[in-house]
Image 1: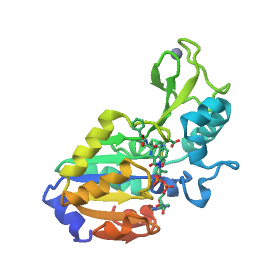
Image 2: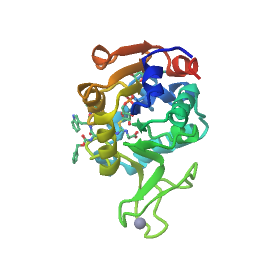
Image 3: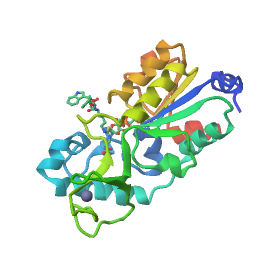
Length: 239
Ligand code: BV8
Ligand code: ZN
């Protein structure tokens, strides 16, 4: 096990925050948002992950989510997810995983102390009566799916562009970022706000920030350490 800053801080029980984005699930086969695999038919995620797109064509938006749910249902966690789950288990100090991902793979890998700040693919909410629940039906027999309580139109339980993030998870993430001694940022292009503020907050509060990414990002010049490579390989070596 390499003796480096990450191990020094965790050995001393310093507070740790892990922030992940789509890149941590790339080796599990889940397409990232902005990579070349980010297209679905001729659409970009930003075109479809909006309240406007859903209001204009709920069927089309649900076709995209149906496609993602079917794809993610066949995906398994990779060594990066496993490393993060093990870090949580073995770390004696405060720990929080903040994920922008909606694929549920961190929980599948055993992570428990986590906040899903952009929601979850497996949750649905009713646009009429407001009930929200987990629904793992793959595929839905008809699109768009309807609420079995009131017959209203269901929407995916995710945060769309232009929508506010759920307050409690965001507050937890902000507080943890301001208090941590180490932040590990894995597989995010760090361009989506307000989550992209977290590493800057941590840095300003004196945390040691490590970025794990296969490419440069706008965050790279600001971090203390940049571990270049595929998360599954880079973190898998530390398992
Ligand atoms: C908000 C859920 C305010 C949905 C997502 C103009 C109009 C409207 C809003 C805005 C605007 N300008 C700015 C904004 C704010 C906007 C924003 O930041 N836009 C960006 C694009 C500029 N933010 C919002 O709208 C947020 N809400 O601001 O609300 C408000 C306040 C009060 C009241 C009302 C409103 C909401 C943002 C959340 C949007 N929802 N997802 C769904 O999934 O369907 S965001 C989406 O992007 C995903 O969640 C994703 O997680 C997130 C970030 O992307 P990444 O995870 O970083 O993925 P990406 O593909 O970009 O990058 C992958 C990275 O991995 C790359 O760096 C790559 O190099 C690396 N990688 C690839 N493979 C590997 C790897 N690394 C390691 N190993 C590998 N193998
Ligand atoms: Zn309903």
